[in-house]
Length: 444
Image (cartoon, rainbow, N blue to C red):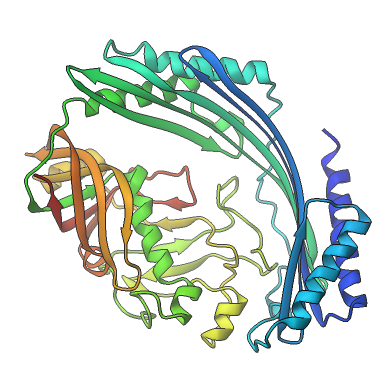
């Protein structure tokens, strides 16, 4: 692989050239982003190689402004001639676009000037042969765990390395490399006439921090075996615990509700919620974009605006929206450094792990899988297919399937009773299990 510094310098030169071309075309402002991505994915199924894929991609996108008129274009051909044509195409679009007083580059004072080193780059010198070996090891650990594991959807090893460069005509030009690696496994179990599947995965910036292949396969098999014998439930109103590995979806609905685009379009159930109590007062949700090696860590957002730690919910009240420069102007507010999304959202955990939460709940439903997308963001109405376990006396009684859980997100957030200490750190949202006081479970 060509030296990272050389490739980074080359990309920065191309972004700088594109910005200069935009100036020459008469643009009052411009921003450009370029990227190089390389990766390897190997999948084994039933002990045999199923796929081995290499990929290597490059791209550059540019947005130009003529006052409040905006045009964008992109290309995967990074030759000088292609880049000039891409700028010309963006300028042609902008000249025909409608004027938008909120369009434009970010406030110069908001741009990142001191760039922290977040330790995001840990390339993995993994060849195809070793990747296949790891996938087979992972799957074998699952297949040999129990006689009721009868089939496999395969185990996959992924390694990815990329370089991103961002620049604009306000003088910002910076780039950095980052890596991401993962290992996953899914298997099928059979008992009598019933079959079930489940999975497990591990992901990290640093390959040394991945779970061992045997551990991933074993966890996938254990989760599959635990689901055998599942039955439905009669319709009832019960407390529900979202297992940590799927609880992030619930926090994700809150984040969508306070996202600037949904707020200024008034397509969110959380319009005008700033400063209002949405959760119980023990809830603290905050963004921590500078966690070393964090999956969601970033020194700046997609506009070059400096990212910073800040509260989204404090004392149960909405403390901040999620804004880029455009949505901030539409709402007559300031950007929160979230162009492109959030970076490591954390909900502070309580003292009880999942087992303790089950004891405290006594009787109710533990949800471990969600299906479908029955969310109405305008009203907050929530309805999703689910699977998990029925709990009595604080203990798992039997697995359940073919049920639907329903409620309204405002009621669900207000009815949050506890956050578990079993925090899942594998994604961009870090949360423990979430215990809600009451939901409708629809089954037989």
